[in-house]
Image (cartoon, rainbow, N blue to C red; front, side, top):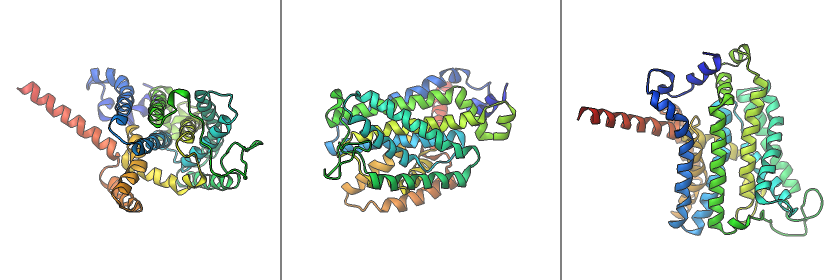
Length: 356
């Protein structure tokens, strides 16, 4: 067995580390990994039947931010590269999508794809420091990048249909949202459209982690020197991870650009990237399902507190206490703990069924 497989097994769940345990489960594992995003998406598509227009908009934003959290989960949870620039990439994706959409010649799906390609290329440039930096130093570099993006956007603003390359007209007031596709013109239809696209992003991430890139990322995360000794092109796979994370986040930013009200610079403060990291650590950094929970924590929880008349600032305290509790008692986060609890429950039910 090669080093890639050893590293992949070292980061896999316990049942995947032992070849003699649950062969049938291992055969079903890729299917189940791809099935849960489809199940979550199917459940989300039914939510508009039970929620108001306000909550549809909130859940649309939660779906978008779950993809931003997914990109961070790929970078840190799979490769060990910490980035605090995901919110900045979300803003860049929104800006790019609005500028492309205002040409009026590209269909919405092509705007999403083109935006993802642009942000993916930017991700490769961002990933270049990761070839020599890691840990706190890489986090600081990406955080400064996020602050730089905020400063640039403050000066150039988001496109509002104006002339020139920037597409901004200071005479016009307000923002102009990206035009939605004809099949998703209403808020409810657009929510369903967003959920489907976000599910595809999750499936794309799962496909990468189940293939050769995922095994290479696992080897790099375990030991970069061992990965180099095994013949893995560390430069290629690190840049690949950044490109994939920024591609998905760019697509999410394009989806956000077509949400109600358009985009403003104030939606993307640099410190939001730190909040995203904290939420993802609590939700489950090493499980893609944790990205869904993180999106809900970032957008649904503040809306819920607002509905109850409670100040949203209390979330800073909740996130701080929750982060400490997670790091001390449950490093795998909510998603990891839930996965273990369900596995234990399933095992106990199986034992009772065999003994009865």
